[in-house]
Image 1 (cartoon, rainbow, N blue to C red):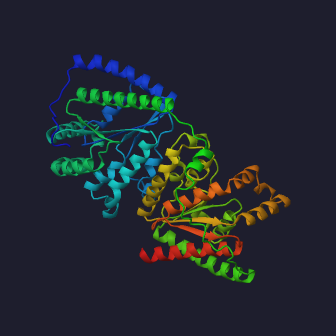
Image 2 (cartoon, helix red, strand yellow):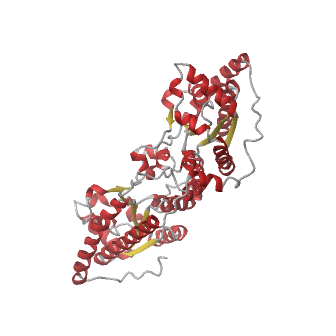
Image 3 (cartoon, rainbow, N blue to C red):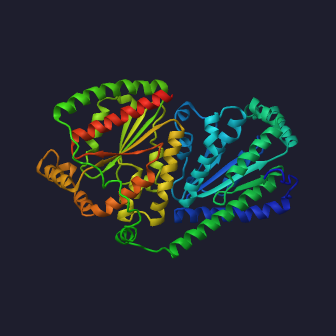
Length: 500
């Protein structure tokens, strides 16, 4: 992609000024339209050192309302970022609906500067391009506008600019040994960049190569590209609004009721149980083991992510409580997941889960999780069919990214039968200390048991993977269920420690 670039392209000031006045006016108007229509925008700047990324960003934002965008500079990862999955820090930079995030370097650092400097590990590099492509597909599928620029200058021009920066006491701090090393080994960095661009240039997220020797030409090309992409995004949003087909949740459930006839739940033996004495003995043994393993996880910097789903009154809270009783409270967090708030709704549905990922050595426990997308959101019509259908792939990619970073990921489905659920509902209603646990929504969801069972079966079949398996917990007996959860967690951590 880079070797055919003509770096001699220029634009004189007589052409540049009237063109930029026109483009600036359009950019201001398009920003307002994106805000009005709730269209999020991400603009990334990559390229050779001293190619002018900062200058181009400053020029691009001149006509924009500063209340509607934020600029992020991606340096080498901090200690906090180092202890999280590779993409975690970028999820924290994601724009809400109608906002713009501008990134001076981005997730491509792992394939560019960090790789050249030997900061990227072989393990990270093995999966980085695939993770990036999946990440960008997830963003653009959710109609986030993603614009990627790569600024190119010649080695001669790079040396000239670095020298000029270094000669001024006001800018000398911006030039590092790494900048000069990459300049001296320009051809090697060029080949590395070419490989990264080829692996990540996709129809949904294409690269725009910017010939950056002439700053006027580069600024005009960048502004023109952003204008074109935003105009296309607004037209596409208007088209989707005009041609949106409304299908009720009931119709959707009926249409797809026969998609997956193989049931993951049908053969589960819910008669499994333990006596109180058996339960208390096993509970003591397993909690003692878990306490020790929790310390080992911290020492070896291994993160653990546990997700709990299940029927209402299925025993999620009780199982989580028996887990946390054995843990150091400084080393875990429990996330009760309810309906998204306004801030969460303004972001991609996975944003609130990515930003809650634990750092290495810590544990995150989710009481309900990202699987709401393919259950309650699917059945209650809170997302479109297109959105919940593609969510299986998006969730699998997310969990794979977590395990690629070294995390243990386990997902529990707390399974009870309909009669046991009714018994527990009645018990909660009759006990003043438990009445807060039962709501009208619980009874309403119970009326849709058969529809939920279809959705749950599909979820279990399509998202149980070798790296992030589903564990179906026979939960009619609370004693049995709590012990199975503890045993599963203990065994998974012991296996992971043996591999470390």
